Length: 79
Image (cartoon, rainbow, N blue to C red; front, side, top):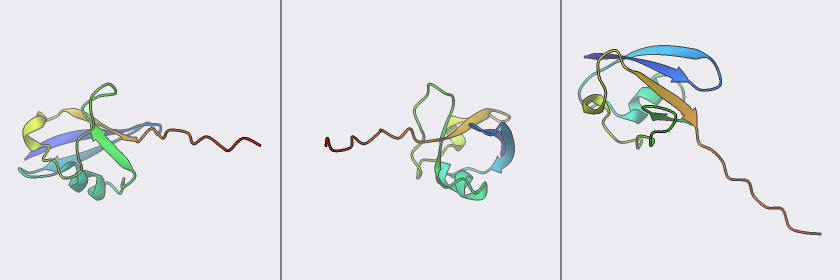
């Protein structure tokens, strides 16, 4: 097992989780009730896919980051 600290962007929360081999990013987000979030190793790092196993990609005690997807604005029709 590995222990991770998940930093929830915009809230100041840090939530601790334990993961086992095969644990996916989606598993972690579901466990923390953060279904609208994505996980990454840092602010400038790519997001893990929901079905991607993160166990081999993180170190015990590491901080990872949960943030919402950046939404692209939709242009409104011109009047």
